[in-house]
Image (cartoon, rainbow, N blue to C red; front, side, top):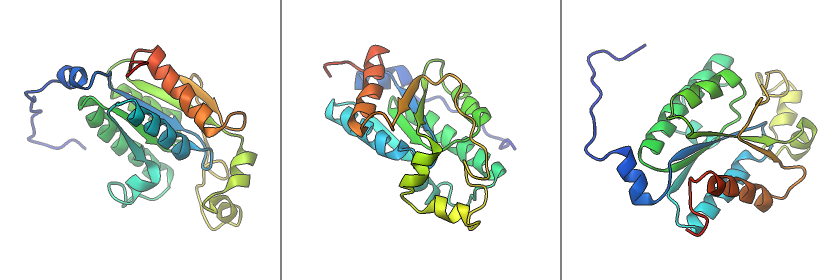
Length: 202
């Protein structure tokens, strides 16, 4: 439901000015993949590389956001949709500030990822598919969630009893069972350089 009696207030400093100040093009790296695929690990490795290059970036991690902004949401399909809607709005504000922002969320539904993409300026949404086979994710099980899901202790768990829509045409396709973390991270940074979001020698 839309909030009534509110009017958008234009700011003095434009998005373009903020981007020029930071010497980078803002964008949203949207990491998607199964639990245990390595989304947060790789997103953090990319963020570290960007920091070393002097880039202005920020990582919004799924678990961390659920400790605060989305702490009132569970994991039903409807609540997952609202989770992604909220983070999409926050990510849009970050890009308006001229930042390279990353979101590491399972975001299982393609319709929600499309909605997030539509909130941004054309070309700013970069879908990063962390492609890790379910068997590998389950063998890692860093939080013990697959074990609980298999035991019926967790409902609506993606890959077990809740669907995951595999990205049909991701901008970046990362296979963590074939590459190490640093190689995966460098692949993503190279994409940002090749597409002109950041400078190769910055």
